[in-house]
Image (cartoon, rainbow, N blue to C red; front, side, top):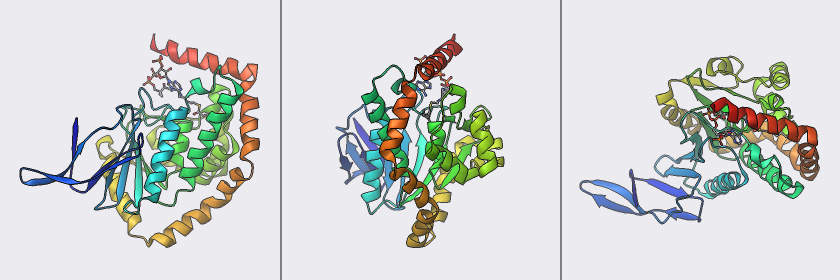
Length: 299
Ligand SMILES: CCCCC/C=C/C(=O)SCCNC(=O)CCNC(=O)[C@H](O)C(C)(C)COP(=O)(O)OP(=O)(O)OC[C@H]1O[C@@H](n2cnc3c(N)ncnc32)[C@H](O)[C@@H]1OP(=O)(O)O
C-alpha cells in the first residue's frame, strides 16, 4: 500500500519508530510517497507538515477511542517524538473516529483486573497527562465528537479547544455518574480552565455539556461548524506560532508547572490510592452496572 501526501508532509508512525520522508514525482506535482510497511494496527495517525511545523495527530482506536494502556502508550511515544522533532512547532489533537473525540478511559482496564494491572494502567494515565499538560509545544484540541471524562481531560490539557457545533456531542468530567471520582489532577485541570465554582458543580454532578454550553463556561474556546474544526485549528495554530516561542513556552509553564509538580511529588501515592479505590467491591459493582447500561443502551 502506498500513501501519497502533499509536499512537505511527513507521515509518522509510532508503532515501529518509523519516520518516513523523501519525495517523488507524480505527473507535474511533487509529492511525498510512502510505501508503507507501517503496522496496520496503529491506533494513531500523525501527519507533520514540515513547511508549517504543524502536526495533526488523529486518534483512531475503534470504536470510540477509549483510552486503554496500549493506546495511551502509543499517544505518549508519538508526543515524545514530536517534542524532540525540531521541525514540529505545534500539535493538533483530533479524532479519526466518527462522532467521538474520545470515550475517556477504557472502563475495561478498570474492571475485573488485578492490582498490578490497575497500577500499570494508572501510571500510563498519569504519563499522558504529565506529557500533555507540561508539553513544551503548542497543542490545540480539534474536538470533532463527544468527549466524556478522560476524553475531556485530554482536550483540557491543550492550549486551545475548538469544538464542532453539533448538539449531539457532549464534553465534561462525568466520573461521578459512573460512581467514581476524578482524581485531584483531573480536578485541577478543570479548575484552571473554568474556575472554582463551575468546576465544583461540574464535578459533583458529573455534568456533560453541549458545545454551546461548554463555550459559555469556557470549557471550550471556540465552537465552529463541524467541517471547519480542523481548518480553524490550523488557523489558530498559526496565530500561536506568531508569538515568540520562548516567551509563550515560559508563560505556559508558569501557569501549569505548580499543578504538574503536585502530581510529580506524589505519583506513587496517587497510584496506590487509585488501586485501592478501584479494587473496592462497591466501585467494581458501579462500573459493572455502568458497562451493562452501555450495552443495554444499544438494544
Ligand atoms: C477512580 C479514578 C477515576 C478515573 C477517572 C475516569 C475517567 C474515565 O474516563 S471513565 C470513562 C468515562 N467514559 C464514559 O462514561 C463514556 C461512556 N460511553 C459513552 O457515553 C458512549 O459510548 C459514547 C458517547 C462514547 C459513544 O456512544 P455510541 O456512539 O452510541 O457508542 P456505544 O455507546 O454503542 O459504544 C460503542 C462500544 O464502545 C463501548 N464503550 C464506550 N465507552 C467506553 C469506555 N469508556 N470504555 C470501554 N468501552 C466503552 C461500549 O460499551 C460499546 O461496546 P460494545 O457494546 O461491546 O460494542
